[in-house]
Amino acid sequence: MATVILVRHGRTTANATGLLAGRTPGVLLDDHGRDQAALTGDRLAAVPLVAVVSSPLERCRQTAQHILDRQAVTPDAPVDPDLTECDYGQWQGRMLSDLATEDLWPLVQSQPSAVVFPDGESMAAMQARSVAAIRRHDAAFEAEHGPEAVWVAVSHGDIIKSVLADALGMHLDLFQRINVGPASVSVVRYGASRPSVHATNTDAGDLSWLSKGLHPGDAQVGGGAGHKAPSTSGA
Image (tube, rainbow, N blue to C red; front, side, top):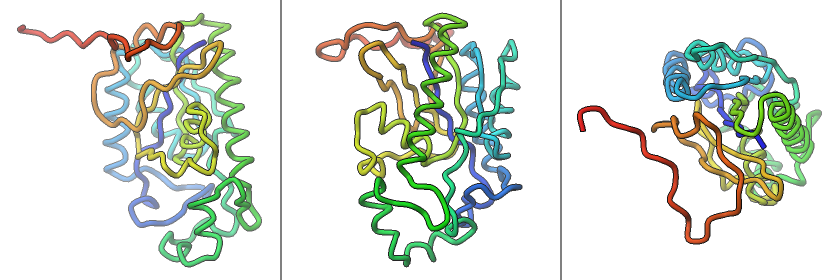
C-alpha cells in the first residue's frame, strides 16, 4: 500500500490558552504554530507527495498550505470532513482546567471507548470515521499512483492518536498513552497483512528517506538495517 504521513496542525491560539476549540470556526495558528507548520513543510519538502488531504478546519488548512508551498510540484489538496475534529458537544469552547473537574473526565482518560460527549460524538465513532477515511484515501492513492506513493493527512490530535492506536493494534482505551504534538509527523504504511508504524510524534529530523515510499515485506527479525542515512556535504 501507499505511505501516509499523519500531520497534526500547528499550535493555535486556543492550544496556547488551554481552550478546547473542537469545531469552533475561526481558530487559527498563532505565530509559534505558523513557525511549526513551516518547519514541517521544510521537513517534507524532500518527499514528493501525491496529495495533502486536510480536515476542513482552518488550522489544518493553514498547516496543509505550508506543506503545499514547499513542494516542487503541487500535489492534490482535497479537504475531507471525515478528518475533522471530534465533536465535543457541550465541552467545546470550555477551558481544559474546567473540564478536568467534570465527572466524565476520568472516563475520557481511562476508558475512552465508553465516552459520548454531551450533545456530541462518541470517541469510538470518531475513531471509526477517521480510520475509515485514512484507509480509503490510502487505497485510492495507491491505485492511482502505485505502491510507492506518499501522501499527507493533516488532522487533529485525538484523530491522529486514534488512527495510530488502530495501526498499532491497540484498543481505543489505551490511546491516551500516545502523544501527538502540534505540527508533529507520524508515518504509517498499511500492508497486505498488517499496518506498520515507522514514526510517531516527530517534530525534527530528516524525512528524505520517505522520498520513494516504504517498500512492503515481512518484518525484519532483529530490527533490520533501517533506512539509509541522509548524505552530508563536505564529508
